[in-house]
Image (tube, rainbow, N blue to C red; front, side, top):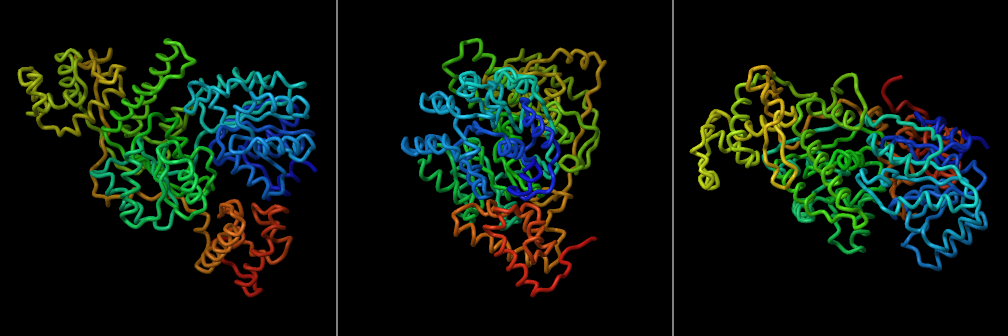
Length: 621
């Protein structure tokens, strides 16, 4: 069987997506590969297809137990013998799995990086025929990656211990240029085929909202999206509990997830979310990595994350099925202070020396600033994200909250001069909150304590609101006219270019959105349509019936619904109306094993609904 036969038989697809074939061919030719592909681009196909064609076993090194279980469950349901070995198994279960693997039972084995260091596993690997070692979530190998795992550094030592060097493949969804270089160097990839398909997720709509109350926005938004699955990320456990309480009080089917809960409760809540029993999840960033739930329709960040890497990975859990989905960040200036506090109090890795700890702290501060600028920019949000990851775009996307706003250009050079004068007069001893208060002439206890009213710059911008002054300060920070110190106080200082403004050699212009009334909780809708939007009323009715059948089967087999069939596959059934085995196998996502398991029941459901008659249930040609 060739690669196309494997793709159709086990995965139900007729063709490969962008980049998949290049990496598969490179692996089959014995070449190392590095694939940097966005979430939902089909990274797993790139190593699972060659794993079935290579003579021996493929080891997939994966950072999370939940990720391994999801992948192995999906493979077994597709008719592929796979197993995982991690701390969730007893020693007897691990020994049994290794015995079966040595006897040729499994083609793919998922393993935690820590397991590679054990004598028992190494003894097995030395005797077995290991054709490929695949490193999933490869950004974990770099201390500049957002999920650094020290155990990943020992992978290359494990590979060198094997009797014969296998192909080494590495995959990740988010990697800056520095992380990309780290992956290649630390894994000692040999003349790798590197593929960067781009970071853009065209089905995602990005928005930054600054509502008067986040709770009000959240309640209104969820009320407008009934029945849809969504994740609400919070920076702290306290906020998770607050949001969870808010959702439960509103009678919404919600779960929660954070490190303060017991292992049993976290597991139960995660399964309730995956199985669609509780479609809403309030969580810290401890939740989500490796969760392959395809029908998450929105991800809302109740608090600003610490970095663009974290944000894009978390937001990317929306719309893994390729359907239009929304990624909304609720911003407040308080979020910056909370994140700075979390960075300052982060436990350093004991393996690092003072210089490394300082370098990482400075990197964390730069990332936080970049995240803050994302929230403040008036330019295209998608363009900002892609540029951050080193990808240049030709034009604004037209499909984010900023692109859908009208802006006016405002010359704020004179106001900027007054801000610089104030910062200089205060000799860089205060943060933006105090500087804004001085400029506006506020009469607070803190400013009286600082004797702010005695300064020349006191009250020099009385006509501007506090929000507008802070907006101006943030704009000047982004333009390099000001900068903040790297300590927890983030004191404002005048940048090198500030003199050009004071001397009249540099004009300061801000793009400001035209104020338009908009209902709370509802950003403008994405222009894209979901796959199911092509169905007419009869088609949507059949789609709902197929979803009900899928849920029944999922509960019978104790698997998440998307393991049975994705929404995309169900829509294709409504379009093609398969009455026979051949017609069902032509449906996108229906392979031979899936047909044997479920095809007959879905075929009968379609035939019964249509009463044996073919009829067009969709719009268009």
